[in-house]
Image (cartoon, rainbow, N blue to C red; front, top):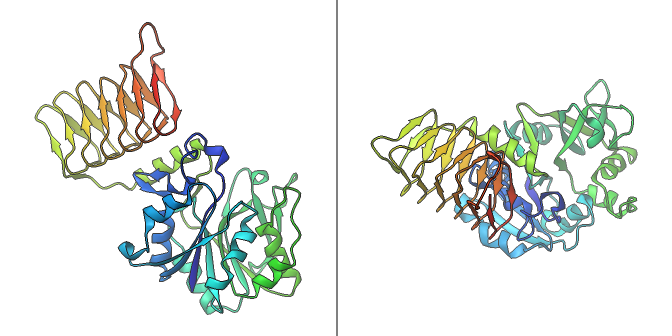
Length: 357
């Protein structure tokens, strides 16, 4: 099988974080979201992968991933341009796919448990397509699938106004090349896009079989800032303690903490895991870093408290305040202001930003 990973889209719900690059490159626990997708495909034995690019700084995706050899993959880049729907992005991969079955993986998905089982079932079975599903509490916010007693998909409904199913279509699909004929017959939806739910319906109405596969473990669509924080939390739940840097005598480190090479935790500072600190970071003086925080390479945390936050690379936080549930973009600074300020601060900052609190 081959893989098709979508790395386009405008990422409007993640602004300002997505102003300077694709949302799929935003790091979860210090690793770009799209890398989790690629690793998942590799673990399922899929090494030939097309990455579908949009118009939001696509060169950054190429720079980050290269030809894929670093991860034992063979990457091909396909330019979609303006977002015209998931089904249109799939159609763009037609030449790459050729006569092979393939997996479509949205590059802002995060999945625990992997897709190896789904791939195996699809390869062994005779279905024309398969979709991954996850039970959700708010089905009206998703495309959902209705199943028959055999677990085959009867229909898909995009964001139903009334309850039809609580099984969300999560953005991992498997197809055979015949799906391209279905997509060619699609009409754009009310929002002007070729919808993947219409594609699934088209496969069914043309006589094809669509199998379902329910996710084991958790799944996150990292489309909004709060989703990113929740995803970071979930990944850090599995963090292994690993101290490569320096913990000075008198520093207090408890719980599962990973400290990258060249990083220092000064005496008098407290770090309570799970916390992930990248390479060449400096924690201190007078700093507290609390659970479920990730800190990117080259960052400085001093004279403040940080908890349940994502600090990306080359960030300085030195503000005599408590930063909670926040995302601070690369090369940004959070510094102290003059006068009174609230004890706790929650921020979402894009790249190269300075604020005083």
